[in-house]
Amino acid sequence: MEKTIIVTGGAGFIGSNFVYYMLDKYPDYKIICVDCLTYAGNLSTLKEALKNPNFRFEKLNICDHDGIKTLFEETRPDIVINFAAESHVDRSIEGPEIFVDTNIKGTQTLMEVCRELNVPRYHQVSTDEVYGDLPLDRPDLFFTETTPIHASSPYSASKASADLLVLAYCRTYKFPATISRCSNNYGPFHFPEKLIPLMIINALADKPLPVYGDGLNVRDWLYVEDHCKAIDLIIHNGKIGEVYNVGGHNEMANIDIVKLILKKLDKPESLITFVEDRKGHDRRYAIDPTKIHEELGWLPDTKFADGIEKTIDWYLSHKEWWQEIISGEYQNYYAKMYGGK
Ligand code: NAD
Ligand code: DAU
Image (cartoon, rainbow, N blue to C red; front, top):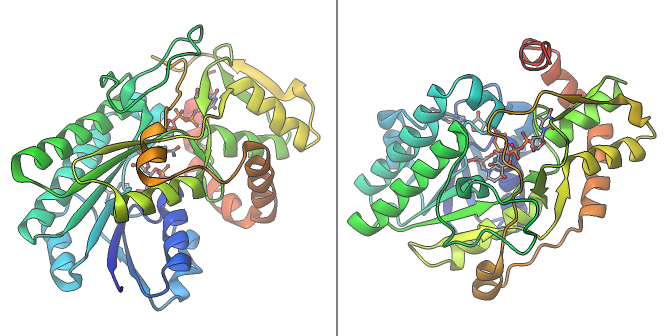
């Protein structure tokens, strides 16, 4: 059956992968991307999607109530999926305000418009970071959907606040929403300020690879397409008012990821440079995905060994995509964040 889906933040990393996933899987769906194109949003990422008559792009800020309402009135979406966010922890430490505006106020604005127009379904793309972190010496512990919210950074606090608003709307207004909390994603179109693309790009240029602290912090990596598959299942079969954790049991220390990338690119480990730690740095993330597996049948398809290979190949064959990004404002960002470290 034909559906109209609004994808906010669809010019970013995960949102764009989701746009391509949905256009491919549902040729009769209309996909509308709402994105205000911050530094992290890139229209060239959507170049192929823009050729598809079922895809439309609208440059709009999710905090712009009237603009969003006009678009929703015209297009009458069946489902709104909110990927739009300020997403980088390090930037949130430097300047938290925009994180409050976009991640909290933007979410609330979208939900208000959905309520005003009786949009049948809303999905909030959240993160495992809302649970805070786990100790390294307790490998038996995992985040479940009932783990208390315990955010560490302004970024994760803003995402946690948005989650609380979504759940409050569900209870108070019977708002038809679901939430997913996923672990670290990697894959094509990942903005090069994040660990994996930054290390690939620096290694290719024989530049130092800045590893925070002792490099032993653990993240639980999931190939981005598996996250898209989980969201697809939740929006179609998930229960209203529920939270679903998404993760593939692939915990790795940062230093091991960095060494693996160097090995794959045939570059020396002498490029690794240990730098000052991130403030409030979360030690370990680890998702228990039992609920989404048992209720919706979700399991990841891509093993890390294959996913990282595909990702490195993608960065090697899409140099024009990331070279354009790192030639602009990114240089100032890099000098500011890493210059003194
Ligand atoms: P990203 O930074 O790559 O993309 C964010 C997109 O949102 C950009 O296209 C940007 O232009 C857009 N945007 C920002 N502010 C906006 C606004 N006010 N109005 C409209 N558009 C706006 O982020 P990502 O890594 O793709 O993350 C997408 C979502 O998934 C976020 O909500 C993030 O919290 C969540 N998430 C990310 C990961 C991860 O590993 N990257 C893991 C779990 C959850
Ligand atoms: O867990 C999900 C989250 O994953 C998402 O909610 C966030 O949007 C996403 O950015 C990501 O957050 P992280 O902080 O885990 O990702 P990042 O790539 O910034 O860092 C991953 C790890 O690598 C972290 O322990 C910090 C470390 N790191 C990062 C950078 C950029 C370094 O050691 N050096 C670096 O230069």
